[in-house]
Image (cartoon, rainbow, N blue to C red; front, top):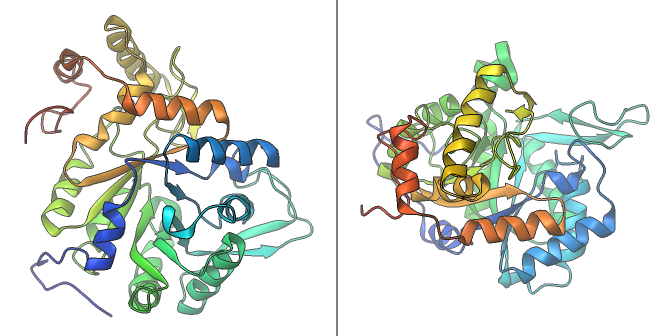
Length: 348
């Protein structure tokens, strides 16, 4: 197992990983929705969304076996067949095995698919099996970024210590071998929790972290120390879930969900304050949510889930829209943006 020194000496990504991360488009296509997250997406609609992303300049696509129990990867693979391999980057994940389950009901784990199940597996053999299955579904012979998926305490509860030990002893070393062999270019973790990132940074040589929902317009305080540490170590951070599970995605008002669950009254009240401030400047909250995380020097890209041509075109437009500088100051003064968080457009 490769580990950092006892004082957490900075390592940075190796040349191949660094080059891969530099190639990422600032906005990535999040593939969970086209894996039938919460609702079915027709094949034609998924294909049209991917083509719209390509035409709009997106060249990085994120997925996972978990997304539709392989459906998301298969849909990407059908589209990738039409594109030159060196013209795009793809990331996927390991940590779950997809198995046939004739009696499996759709929607149990959030995906509208049936006849299969997703089982956690952080063993070396499980990681390699998952990776090989992903290559087959994607129709590729290599992956640009490979993340270990959902290893946090909130996911595993009392099994967290066991999972973390297995990740360090088996999963990460297997991923590092894949990197050394050139089957992947960069390795990291894909999680919704800050704590596990901070535990792993000094214990394994990660190239990148995909952190969903924790460094967003809605919340930053918990994640800021992590981002600062990652920047010091040369570990790149990819921000996922910039809309906080739909809370900040609708241009008209707060969505009903936060962190994959119904939003409580306190969450909705804070979201309404954000919408009111943005409305006062005539600005779409979604544009602010997409642009804010990228201002931190540790963040190399933002990935947003997309399921339709309309959502793709909206995300592309939002990510490039010019926003008034005074908006950021108003959000900071209102306590929405933490005083330590870098603001877009501000000098380093």
